Length: 112
Image 1 (cartoon, rainbow, N blue to C red):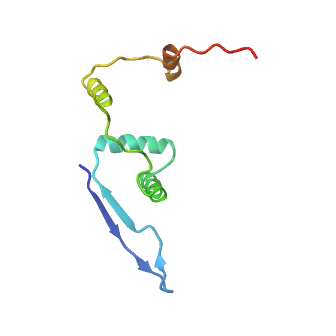
Image 2 (image 1 turned 90 degrees about the horizontal axis):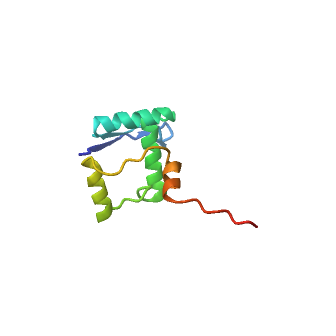
Image 3 (image 1 turned 60 degrees about the vertical axis):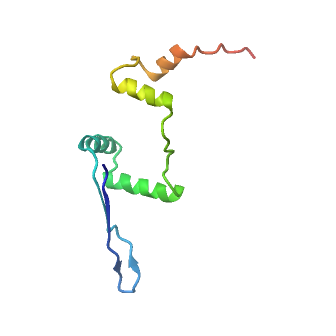
């Protein structure tokens, strides 16, 4: 369950203009493990959680919606997810390149 709360404080300057400092707050309930994992990833790239949320919100505005596609998985994907979550599935070792090379044989180069 996610709970998001917005608190917005707008201040006026002496000239009557709106003060555009960061004064809005977001409170979201997420799984502690997810928060910690995301925090570690963000720290590696030098981005705070606040900056990441701000970037996400800017992308929502720019895209006029979510900045990525959200779809319900089809039956084949759901079955694969269930299989993996139950401990089944096939395990591959090595790099992604090695995996793809083992599945898709490289094409022979044509002489020009």
